Structure formats: structure tokens, C-alpha cells
Length: 339
Ligand code: PHE
Image (tube, protein in one colour):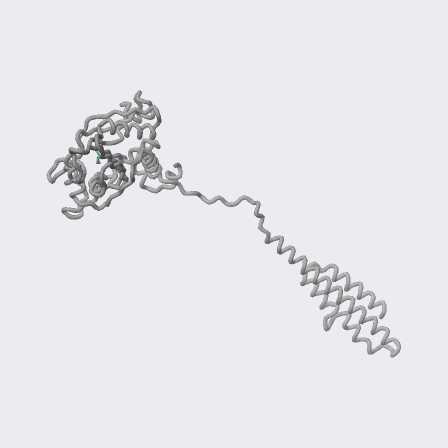
């Protein structure tokens, strides 16, 4: 029995040592120390021993059981510790790994150009103004010297809401609204959306953007107009840019002109961008008509001014060599992502 016990102790110790997880350890415990376990069954055989042998063997068997119990407890402790360590290792976050880059948004090309123009004029001391998109016929036409029946109304196909109310066809009504509320000296630009009942094609859209400009003070002349807009052209398209004023007609300016810039692609030699003209039209302008100053509550005998209006889409098309305006409105991320 003594030998048997010694063998069992060894076997139990080996089984414990080989258990590499808690389940295997539990299996070893049941095998040796469980109710039907091998050590337990030896203890049960004590009754068969002689009275002299019994205490000696009993002591020995108990010592074996205790030793095995202790080694199981120690092994369990060790396994739990190892398990915890493995768990921590698996869950550690390596903060030095590079992150996943989130796609960044882009400014819309129209906004880029608008911001450039705004910055240029703010640098020259202009204020930024705005006005309503739903406008009275009075501000959009009447006060701008385009009375009912005037042929100029035909060139701006208008979305009427009622007989007297419409979607503004130009940002020029902001000129009147601004003069009603501000005394000269006036230097303002008014960017905004305008609406015309035009069918959609590569260069037309029923909704587009304009930037209106208005300067009113004593002794403002055509030279001021030219100087300001030459500055704009040089800042937008480079120091070597020239401008040319071509006579034109707008009812609310007199005299009126269209302003061309020397082609920024070919420098004026002629290329597909400028349709071989060497010049590209970028805006309409003129000296504010005395009747318009009067409507704004400003005495045309004392003050004079110039105004201009430019199309943001047009400007952006040249700026980024985009030949179809529709791209600006389709919100195709492949297009917008290029800016
Ligand atoms: N409002 C004019 C247009 O839409 C542009 C313009 C503005 C012309 C101011 C002269 C002065 O075509």
C-alpha cells in the first residue's frame, strides 16, 4: 500500500504538472481526489489494514492527499495568472499603430472662387451685403430703371411668383436695398443666388451665382471702376493680366461696359480657352445711372458711383478649366474631390 500511495502521489503530481488549463487541472483533481478518485479509494481501504498499520498508513495517505491538494491549488493559481496575462496581452492596444484615415471633405469650387473674390474686395475695404432671393418686381426691375414693358426684361427670363413678386434674376436689387440703408461712402459686394428660366446646358442653369459690386462716393469716375476691376483681375489671374472695357448696355448703368480679361491660358495670343479671341469676358459694369442713385435716396448731383456684376460659375469654369457648368451642381464626389 505504501508503494501504491507513493506511485499515486507521483502520478497525481505529474498529472497536475501536465495540466495546461483549468479544465485539465479539474479533471486531474476528480481523478485523484474526487469521491471515486484513486487516492480516495485507497483511503477507503484503510479498514482492511491491521490496527498497527492503520495509523501509519492513514497518516501517509493524508499526507499524500494534502500534498496533491496543495499542488493543485498552486497550479490553479498559476494557471489563472497566466490566463489573465494572456487576456491582457490580447487586449492591449498599440497606440503607436497608424490610425485609419477618414476621408476629408472638400470646399466646393464655387465656394473657393467666391471666397477668393470676397478676400480681394475685403482687402480693398468693401463690406459684404446680401438681399432676399424672393424679391419684389420693384427692386429687381423697376428701381433699376427697367420699367414694365422695357425690352431688357426679355433678356432675363423671370420666374414670377405673383405679378409683383419674383425670384431675383440678378443681384443688382441689393444695390437699391443697400443704398436705402447706407449713406455714401459706399463700398460693398453682394454675393448670392439668382434665378432665370433658362433650360439647362453646359453654360446655363436656372440657378446660378452672382457677385454684385457697388461703390458710391463723391467724384467716383470710370477710372475708379477700371482700377478696382483691374486689381480684381490681376489678383484672380496673375500680375500680367490686362483688362479691356467694351461698350455695352445695362439700363441701370450709364455708360455701361463689359469687361474682358486677357486670356490667362495663352496670355492673349489666342487658344481654345478664349476661342482664339485672346480675351475672355468676365463681368458687366458701368457708372450707376442717376435714376438708380435717386431711387436709392442718394443725390446724383452730389455723388456718383460704379457697379458691376460677375457670374461665379463663369469665373470658376475658367479658374479650374471646367467646361460644363452642370458638374458644379451634380455633387459627384469624384469631381468635387479634385479641388
Ligand atoms: N446685373 C447684370 C447682369 O445680371 C450685371 C451688372 C451688374 C451690370 C451691375 C452692370 C452693373 O447681367
